[in-house]
Image (cartoon, rainbow over all chains, first blue to last red; front, side, top):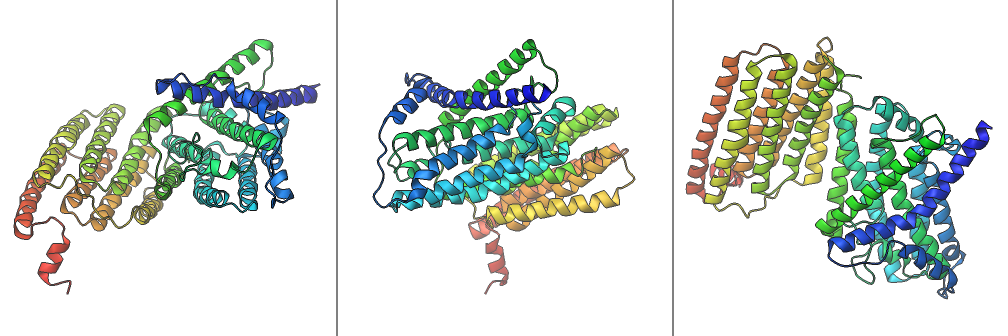
Length: 317
Length: 220
């Protein structure tokens, strides 16, 4: 019985993130539009886009290989598997014992690799430039992410997200290392999700784009898969930040309808707050030149390193 | 001492190291002066918190000096100096932010490794204060080494002094006389440096210290 209810929680959680991801993208766009005094598309617009894309025919480039067709599903599967490992409203998920934070980083890295290879597959120049830029950003963001993981793992004594969340809930205090890790993780999350200082998510056909340039050749259900995967990745990062640094309301052991309602409401509140903050950030700052991106990611890496170093002088260790 | 009090002290001291890194990164003069002001403000907060924790009213005076002189008066004077010399639009060619940051991280690691061995017997607050203070001092020295503009070097010097004060607050029983005399010697040093800056500029039309090297015949 215990196993069955745990599995039920796991699958509810996976379906929840899948259902919530397009709404997050829609809400972020809506808030951003309102901040810029536009009306903006409705929050549910991404769902309509996805439905429409699924109904359309796929147009394939003549010289594309099987990889080009398989890539969207592989990327989506890797991202969803990574999302399944992050506790959203309940810890102790059965899948989370199969993979920790490092596995999540690896799954996302695999998805990015497939995406870059698929972008190169058609041989267009846009795909090539998008892939090269994406990989430049990724090669700088990943070490920073790993440093953040180390910092958090040193504090909590584990790389399991469930264990970390439980630890933070019980005895997470005010620690300067964690503050640095939080800032570093936010920078990394912005870079990985191609948000504004690094890339503009709403441009098309511009020389500055990174992520969108890789999706240019895709259409129909393939594009739907990729867009859903991108929304899912954004929600995944928000969930990681929420469960490591703001684990309020997470259910750690107990059950009951009321506890579930509270934790679900807390999770939704966190996601809404994150989307408002993200939209505000994207409104107040401008996109960076591509060649200045290494500086910002260097700061993230430095913060991660410094956080790890400072841990050794904090009283507990 | 309660863990929360220690955590807050650690937060301020760690923040001081972080602001030192911001200083290394910033290569425009007026923002750099703002960062110095922030550095001193954090020092004042840190010292005041430790005064509260250690129940040592002398330290409140130290915090007031840090706040008044180093966070308000000296940055204001520096700002006026920069504007009067017409340097406020100048971007300094630092050694390269990435390399400097890496060197800085190395120095922090070095000072922590050293201090954690040396102060093995002391209590936690003193240990972390001394370790982080040494990092701040070394980062200030790094700043003085990597910058060519005399004003940035003065700012590096001020941040070294902040590091020394942080070290002093952790060590219980630094006499107030020492503290006050240090504060005044820094003020006097600042005035002397200011006079020198204007002299250097009158003589060489620049505050880039490479001009001095050329004058002494050290470069070709």
